Image (cartoon, rainbow over all chains, first blue to last red; front, side, top):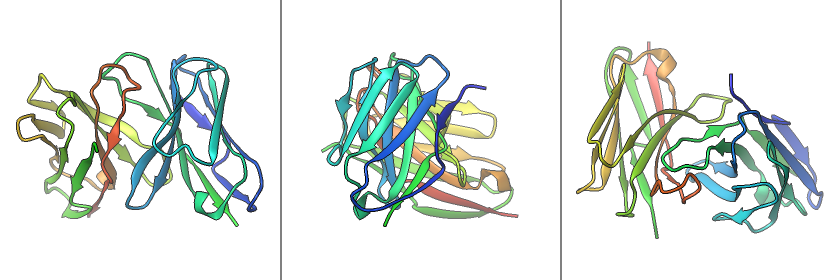
Length: 113
Length: 114
């Protein structure tokens, strides 16, 4: 079964900490995405990558950065965590052609205190 | 800007009844409309999608319809079962590449009452 694996289901971090969220996919997908999910706001795109070492800003990139050193791994970095970054974070991957769906991970629920 | 609206935000149905979720989109360039189901504690899972050259698509108890003129599309679930209880998201994109902007609706929480 194909998979997108997010390293942590739950994380609690302190304000100001640097936080790493890791995502690994085993489908050899070119594209990878980081979304943030908040009640009533749906899914909002933070960053995406369509190739190794490539990254593009999504709709809400402020306060985040990403790293993609290997095709299968896409990391989301919170440089200095703040309480308004408390959220559910979802990683997804897909093939590069159009009109294909995404495969999502199970999510990481991050709480910043 | 581009927007996808989704209604209702919550929906309760008796087991065996049908459920309908409706979405409207604003970008006339949208050509690809996937639907995702998110069960509790899991990530969204693609359950069905439709492309703009098709008006309707069916997969067992699930069907989607698309009206490009009116810019709306709908998910229909027949003979609902308790395991259909989840949050459903519609989405729209141009579909030229898979990283063309995908706009998600805010979600519909479906409860199927046994």
